[in-house]
Amino acid sequence: MLKVKIKRFPHSKDLALPSYATIGSAGMDLLYAGYEPVILKPLERALLPTGIAIELPDGFEAQVRPRSGLAIKYGITILNAPGTIDPDYRGEIKVALINLGQEDFLIKRGDRIAQLIIAPFVKVLWEEVDELSPTLRGENGFGSTGR
Image 1 (cartoon, helix red, strand yellow):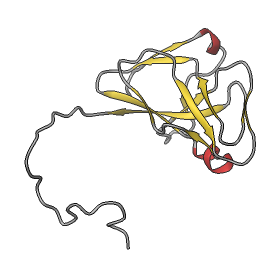
Image 2: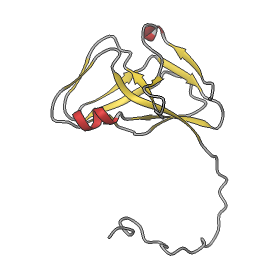
Image 3: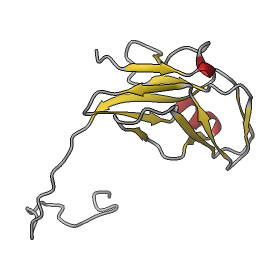
Image 4: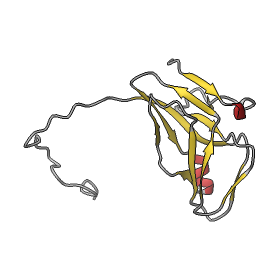
């Protein structure tokens, strides 16, 4: 298990910390920490507070991803999915939700609005070359591997 420091803001002291719903879950639920209910109308977006900040170890990022149930049932997703939290960011995690559904969607304090996944990342050092090694696919792009 990886230890990650977490800070609660005053507006989230009564809410649960992000947690795994099952023993096999990869993502932890993020909760809406606003006091006022939010109604997202179709095609409307909102930046919602979670009331937490984290301190990731070097070489790790946090990915803010949509919740599949909200997406399929109501059309609620994240604008910049997945949102990336860099290891040097210390501010409050906020979630940019959008309603792609056809009905108004109500978000109440403590509702699960997204999931958070902690993942390692690799830094690269570019090596500029005149040619890349050949492959069977070559330069064939979008749709080239389909039927």
